[in-house]
Length: 269
Image (cartoon, rainbow, N blue to C red):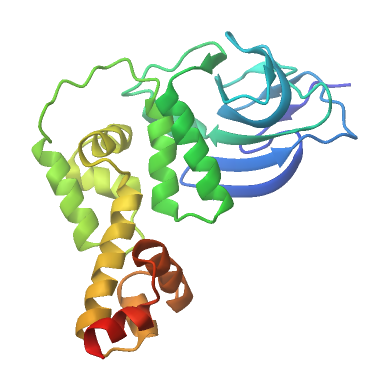
């Protein structure tokens, strides 16, 4: 029997979630108790975040993992038999397309061997990717998080102590076009830098991802319009870049612990 090759975004297991975002494929899956994992090859580079169960990995520094915070990187063309030997467990996978891998390699130096990543920052990013994918997070935020994860391999040491001018330009673009569906490539092009570098530097100096910043801009603009105008809430939601009024209402509640209607009554009676 021929050894299987898994294409972009493919993983063994019963998939719960799949999101495809700008050259990244994000999956959350559980082990399939009815299927034995055979030796196989992954076409693309990918990350595996262990969420639950006993996982056996051939990656350097991994071995037997028991329901612990663990993040594994496998380079393009990895051939292995990594599996849940007890046929129960859960994981998140982030598959990186060849184009995005080549792009990231321009500013990062990814390992040529499968390795377990120990950096707390990389683990935190991977967990945020899994949570955002499961909750239907917006495209820009997911793309930025994936670029941050890829950028965790960078061997370059950033020495800037103040935000560079191009970073202010990037933030300005995000603010002025917060109602639009931007991509990291568009914002990076406007700033004249690489998307991976943009994602890493944005968090370093502003403490959030570009996607999180856009959401903040949207809800702040929405709050201003709710507070100072009598425009219908559905109209405000559309004007500020939300999918619909219910999307704005959920975001409003998370941010201000109240509904848009109640918020308006506080200011307008």
